[in-house]
Length: 84
Image (cartoon, rainbow, N blue to C red; front, side, top):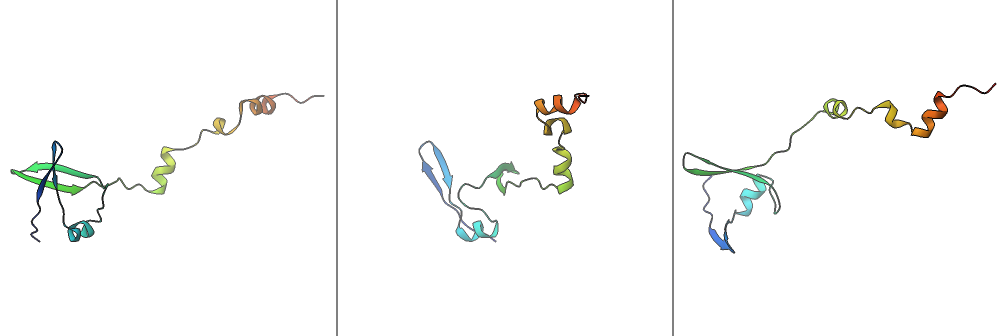
């Protein structure tokens, strides 16, 4: 698909307008982040993708520390000797 865009001056920058049909195909909207690079003297613009993690990976990265689940004052009570 060949589409013509137009460069416009905005303050000290240049803005490239992207037609709505291209934005829809790529699921982009105002505020979306993109990667911009040069390849063989051409500008390549790609949607910035987020890393996809499995639930197991997320849980492994945030495995709770059992001691952090108990308040400090509760540690004293739990580790105290019974009163006889």
